[in-house]
Image (tube, rainbow, N blue to C red):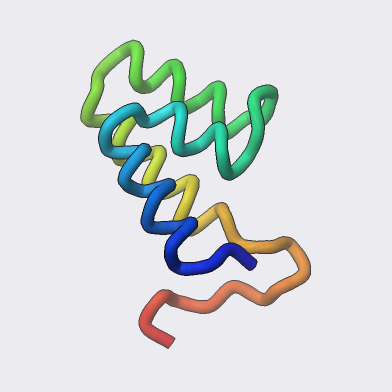
Length: 71
């Protein structure tokens, strides 16, 4: 599981350059990265929204059960 500092920096990068934040979390040839890249090319705001979604919601470890951020 990523530390809070890593997640914070990835979100910060996702706001500045959306595909870069997703790249650090999921890698270069992942579906999340390609979707984020296409959305960023079509519009900057949709790219930011999807990048934050990909980092926070889809970025958890597959072995761990999903929990809301407030739990």
